Length: 525
Image 1 (cartoon, rainbow, N blue to C red):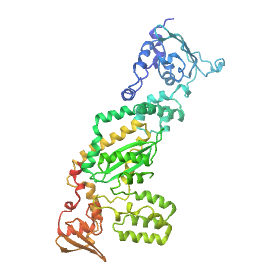
Image 2 (cartoon, one colour):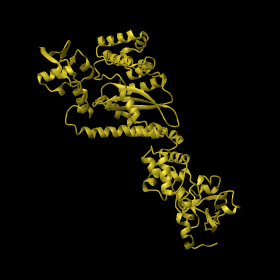
Image 3 (cartoon, rainbow, N blue to C red):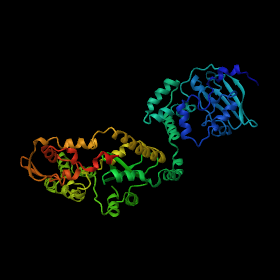
Image 4 (cartoon, one colour):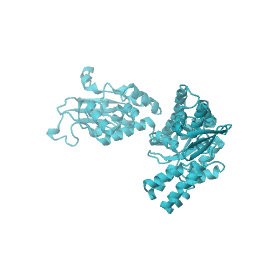
């Protein structure tokens, strides 16, 4: 039977190609992330049948058992736009019958709608031909379309919003669909749609793992030897690194081990990261051995560091030690004494705090002594690193920065971390160009914090560049030439303490000249 273009003008008003109705951004996202899926697979068959078939009635879900599904892939637009409750009365490899109403109630008069579409498969042309069409509708508007509104249909309409706003709430999506398309969907439908869109954007898990070696080879090709970050650490960072691990949050479980340094502005400097199945001694040992070769220098971590890097100073995170200590020994008094002991710069102060803990609870004292105090108390730290940190704060900060990336498939996650490290270096180089001081601004702020009470200290000159500062019964020796103070804070941090601030102010010298060379703008760059 023949039909003129006028007959179909209104009926096919909802006829769209699979990508119609999407913004240019949507189409660009598809071309970027789904380059393995030919666009012709979608578009060519529709170009053949778009003048003779309502592509709105064809969807992967309903045609999954039909040969038509291999040739035609389209979405439900027409029925949603006009509120028609269409369903497939027959659907096989050779024919397709579409009716309007409620499936299974065709013989009931109250559910009868005369609309009927019959199409058949043309073997020679490899396309679909419309055989008959009754286009009259006498039914009321539908707002619930069930399986006709597939996750793919929703996902294609909202792929830009999901890409730009990964934390888009499902209920916000439901409200927007109802407002825009006059369509009521369930929270399960939008949840599956969001998952579909994220899979389109980020790739399937199987594809990620299948291409991991290709990804590794490309990294080796574009960054021979992986020297950019490690060389930057050698040239401009203090010889202190923080090792930590965090759990992946996606479907595939595992852990991400990270190595973080401290740059001249006392900020996060990512050095290396690796994905492992579990955080244990064997994996840490393997990772640290690779790290040792590159840098020349928790579960299983302490043993691994001790075995592989026995000639370097080891520190534990005091915050993690207190977290376990606080479970058994609660109370504000224990908390104050623990942090007082940990932050003590000299051994006599540390011993005084520990004796008070012992007086409160001998078992608490024994517990802390079993945790190797020399690895979490400042009084025992070396003075050649310009770092007084007793906690692994920067590693925890890095873990929080990449928390969203840890929810994504493997290659997508690794790429986001790589791009973050690259962008951070570029951004900080731009920011450092605005600095007017030779010393990094975070260090200057820290020095001012140390010296805020310097006017209360009395300074007297002993000989040469040796001075004495006094406040009440407290007295400290300051040696400007050796850049040392008996409080040890200057020795540990490389930043003048309150006694040094008072002394330099007393002799009218410039404070910045007495800051460790690790904190200069030159080192930062």
